[in-house]
Image (cartoon, one colour):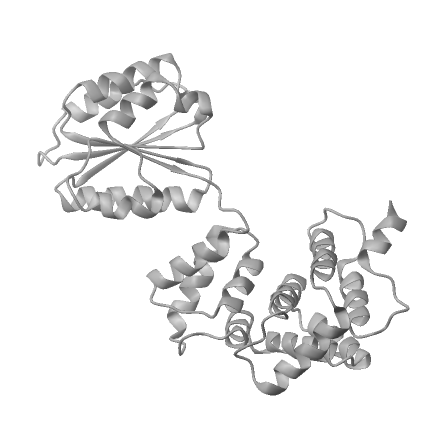
Length: 329
């Protein structure tokens, strides 16, 4: 049967299946699901783990021989098999069908990349689906990432306000391993909860990065000279472009709903919202700067960021990043 990644732990609390297939391109999630299977198997007496790599020279019969051979202490085994997508050939297909057709005193754990539709319609896949447990792990989209982060934070006993979760999602840029590391870092800090956006930025980027919010306050207050001074200081201190950009996009998304902020900050945001009228075009400009920072578009991202911030601070004579792009192409 097929079990979602988030439901696998519950499934493993009962009687173990004889075979598990974990498939997907999100390495972190695949490894965590496999670790969960291994941990559950060990609690049920499968204390010996043997790893097999299906590559050139591999023989599927070796799995059967390994399962049948007893160790010195007669321990039951977990056979951890790492398979490349192209290694599900005719021999492998027959071996997997033979495996589920026989009673084995071992847990077979198969881990592989994302399977193609034709592979998910194959006879070996259907045999595993009927006899064991299959967990297909799909890429997490940018829209899904905040929800994934929130669930992971809750599992660690952490609560962060929505703006903070969005900031964290923007910061990791879809890298789940980086996201997991940031969550682990926050777990160790013992912060009072719920963690605010300002505290989150302060903790993740060190105290100097808190000035990113001073920068945004200067933008909203239409103080261009202060914008230039703070931005130059942040860059000189080595603050990452993406940290500033992430703080900016998080604040922009909060413009429509500044509730929960101090009254003075709410008034500042409301005036800023009236001045820019619409947030989406500004977010589109931020996306261009993000692409420049990653080398996907021409132009200096720091120059583009300064121009955008000054435009938002009412310096109308400067061009926007999107306007500069039209000149560069």
